[in-house]
Length: 74
Image 1 (cartoon, rainbow, N blue to C red):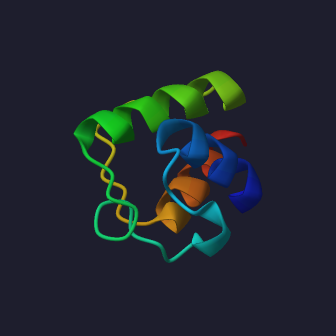
Image 2: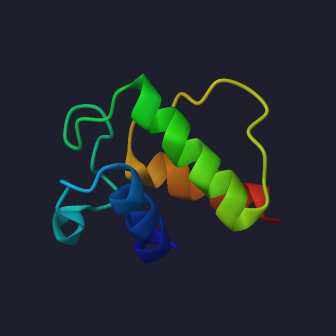
């Protein structure tokens, strides 16, 4: 799942070196996501996994996103 998410991150933030992205990578502090990038990532995730986000996306780390997607796919 992490590798799949890295591809989606790369689509949104092409300058991010996804080779260094881990589950502990922080979206804002480490990957320099802003609110628009978070929204674009969410849209890509919704398209890729056929899920929808029901509320605010308060993700701090890449691992938070992975956990949400894995839970939503069940």
